[in-house]
Length: 303
Image (cartoon, rainbow, N blue to C red; front, side, top):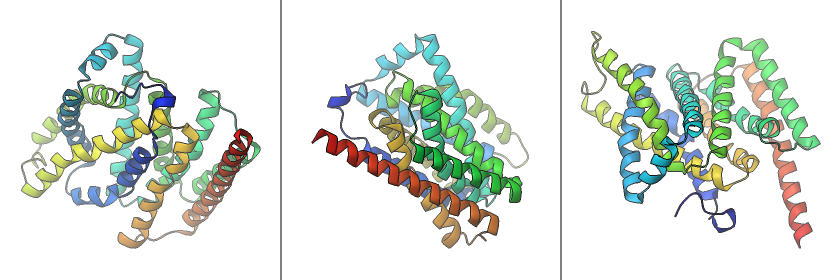
């Protein structure tokens, strides 16, 4: 089934969204297995091992024609270049943050992202915010201000993750290309850089991480699956669901990350971080309450 099916004929994007955010939510546990691998090299291998998996699935679904049409459209290729750069930035910053034990900063970035999605929808997609949604955005801005005052060294992590993934979703939502062909092209764009990265590390005295240890090498191969599957699910969900609703479901991932930082990695939660989280959770509660109220109102209007 094509992802370009008219909206009324499309299946729900909810299962895809839940699957994507659950995988992203437990990703820190997987990344921590690569503590001996430099973050840049790890991201390089993620990109390299993602491409073969994408090509296999594209061949199975017979979607090479869609990829060819995208390559023949210069404006679409420019947009996919932009989305590829955005997701590469997101991958690197997230990997670096987890490996540097900045789990809370990574979690906060993805708590901010749904609220940023609402704001981006207003500024870039012509969507309108309710008064309560503006209040939620204002409270989130206050949380960022507090974090900048007391934890300026980690604020850039949260903001970079939120902005890069928020803009990535906006770009992909507006492209007339299927989820899998789009991801495949993004990976093709990034592969030359990724190959250069892993070759450079291969010529260093430490050598390449791949081939040094059987377990690490096997886990690096699996990184293609860990990378491609949730992104594919997200792209499917983004094309089938309202962006604001998709942002609400995203709260699942940072919650899982936050709980891992607290209970698995045993990281200390500083007062300024706790204050920022409390404000973000308040903003989320307002946002969710407004969303549920508007959904109920719309349902009653149709009845």
